[in-house]
Image (tube, rainbow, N blue to C red; front, side, top):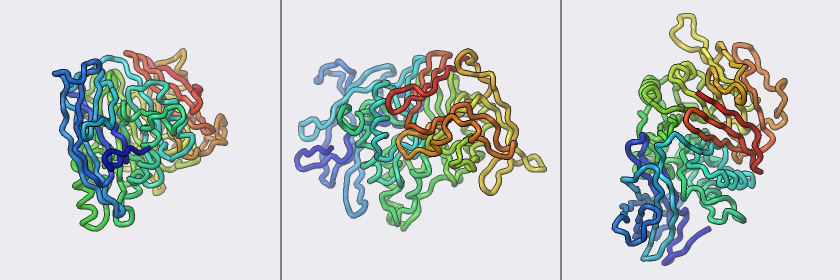
Length: 463
């Protein structure tokens, strides 16, 4: 849906991002929108919800833009930071151009209370009818924010992919007859990198690639590791990309944030990373280890524990299991495999070399080790897990994987015993779905909800 004002075309409607706000000591939001090649003088104002428009408490935010010249077309990408926000407060914003409103909506700031409600989905930006239904179901559950497990857009993470396969579904003002629901203009999406999001790292062949770094605005609190995403191509192309994505590229490949009584650590798990990079592991120790949140959740794209046939050998993130156990992580959320899987609570000790000073990873990416499985936890009567619960939530809109394995444990088995144990307790691959999590003090409730609103799985975890 396009708007035309003074011959200017709004290509992407204004939407919210978290900005560089991680801990619960400072709050902000960032508004982002995109227009065609005709620049405009926009005015962004915001105030507490309920305050009159001309109130003395109305603030005006600075607006900046970058000029993108991609695929022989010029557009402007605008940003405006709403700062000095109070926690647990409703605000409303208004964006005007030449005195006329082009967007207005309300949003809630992060809470400091021990209650959260958020949706999680992955592998979703495919432009599919199922993606549309998922967007509508997410809206019905009224989340405070959305957390993604990667592969935010298909096929290549391009600027055009976002404009075709993501924004029309989560910025659609027609939540009844349209493609999706107006989610992103009122709640932030915290997105992590998947493999499809970085497939466009060669900017010579795909000059509008790595658009995650154009369209995301996330906390800048993680170190830049030695092995991280790179932008390849002629110096002029990469120079323009880095200028237009500064300071986000490659900084927001990893980040963390607090919301209510939950601490989230969001990691890049793509092929080029080293999960045991000393900078990364030290940051995790400092970041998660010092958190006083009731709940600690880690999110990345490629799962370490997966019983599906698809992507089974990609197990490098298993190497972080001992550290996450040590730091008291409760849940790990992943995508990449286009279905839903839940493990029993587990602990894992990766195999070491003969000298005992390094973990062993096979050439194809497998990580053997010793499993400890908590088979007594059922999430109903026994809600106190001994170990980490690993979730794969990758059924958000992309084509489903291994649907014939649903509910058939005999098909989940892999060899040898050092590489796979019967850790999967729920496997649903025949319908599209997303995860919905609520925390209430020392109680966490997780539901898997399908595109029709049916609850496929539900557990409670208590402390």
